[in-house]
Amino acid sequence: MGLFNSLQIQSQIPNLLFLLTLFFALEKKDYDFFFIALISGLFLDFYSGSFFGGFTLALLAVSLCAYLFATNVLVVEINWKTLSLALLAALVFLNLIIWAYQLAAFKLGLSFQYTGIKIFVSKFLVGFLYNWLLLYPVYMIFTFLHKFVDNLSIRRRGVIR
Image (tube, rainbow, N blue to C red):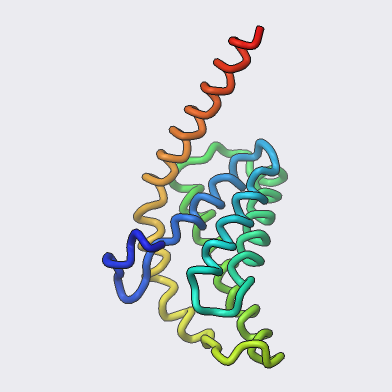
């Protein structure tokens, strides 16, 4: 997130950790997305000024829902259309969880700051478009790195013989 601080559009920056977590959840192979969601959420919680734990909880919930949807319902192959729809649904769900978490922390007296739903709604379109702009390039990098790691593990198995 610090990479795009100087490239803000209406105080919105793309969330590359969220995109990476979404790709791991949509991959349908195993439960590695929980680890990625936890680490990404912790990084985002340390980086943000809001009550701690909101991003971690939201990324874990969104990635679990995306994984369950991808394994049980989704039968088409991942392309830019399905990625765009998955990004839209996941970003709406992520923002709702973060807003509800901040509201609960504020109502319980654990936090002194609260961001209203109107601010989330007014910034949603710009945030979605900025994340959508980097969606497919980050997906291409994700697939390249995934193939690279798979090739390394295949070579390692061949050497062990």
